[in-house]
Length: 547
Ligand code: G6Q
Image 1 (cartoon, rainbow, N blue to C red):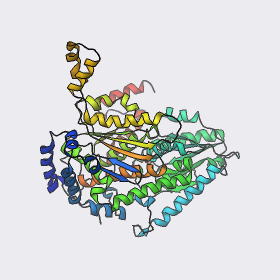
Image 2: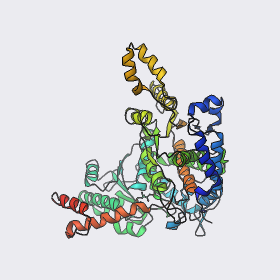
Image 3: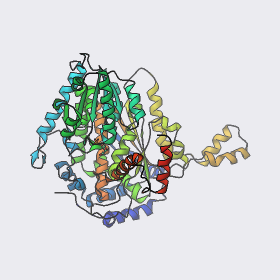
């Protein structure tokens, strides 16, 4: 079983949606509210601790029905079964896509190459939990007998962004261990890390699915060299562990077998925080909270798998993105978490979404003639309000946005949360309602401005509004709710990939740059650079003056 192949442009509902767009293009979000007193109830969902309001969008019920029909026509139902069932839906890499198996809430076997992967998952999870307990309790000792106090996670891309984002997000739940991430190949990055570590109390966790990634191996080698200047060779066993599918390469690096946490090729890098790749998260917050993270994701998986598309949160939000991307010609989507803990969520989702759905070839191998993956960006509110919100409110581009907030703060005893929440609500209201000329005129009059001053200022102070947003309003930031939130976005990616008829789980687009970097790196010393284009030759020559 594998994913079906279709051309979205030939779907009946696609054509109907084009017509729908033409009919609705002039209509304002506020009009939908004035026409239907029950719009908020109809366009919002309560699921577990999530209240999701998608009423502030440029669509009516019929549009949503058509979007759902489009998903059905595109074979989403069958695709979900195929996805969760372990079929090799990452066809170009011949791999299953089973991050969902890592947080499965039932015992039904999942077969990969005719083997049930359930027992393997349990074994690895227990190995990771046991290790984390030992490090956290202090019974795992460094080479001089001291307990570990500092964890340095060495990894990049999927082996970094997820662990970074979740560790920051769960700062409140953290134990005493200090966690540092080093990812970039830039020597200055690793040197800054070296300044902070103590060879007696630091544990280096090398996370690399392939164990061939230039950045990660360079950093790991530099840190090992530094370590061996300050500790005996035998200390490697106390201070270096690795997560990888490539046991051979890890062993060659000098890490003992007992310190290797395997992972499997059916977990894609950008979806791997649920696996042993999440070891730094597990060390930072302990196995209990890690388990809750998995539980939250598992609950969202269940919701996604078994809920009617009309009530299915990841499906609905995903289809709304398709509506803007493919029918309104909108290019970007902003993600604005009203929580400083989630400040890295936009960067994390940027990789998850853009690396998955930034594809120009469809599942038939044909060049695509419609828009696929949109541009994801964002930052934490309210900081973002003082930065790029100007463009969102008054710029010439429409930017649909997800506003993510939490009803209860983690620390109580101050009055900040009401202020934060008032901003959280005000921004989506302002984006939708705008401010008309009449209101602006009244305000300027009340300020005592002359008629001439009013006329001059008026156009600059008007907000046209009509800018769409979703609000994802969650009770509180807990490991479980965070797990559900991440899984929600993962499934949105999947749904879009199905509709757009693309393979969401490969990433060939990152290969060319890596390949050329290797060539250029060799050419710094070979001196033979004539085969490069003139601009690149100029850059290399300029660099050589500084080497
Ligand atoms: C994610 C990508 C990519 C990957 C990194 C690190 O889906 O595959 O970001 O995670 O390139 O790869 P390694 O874990 O193999 O070092």
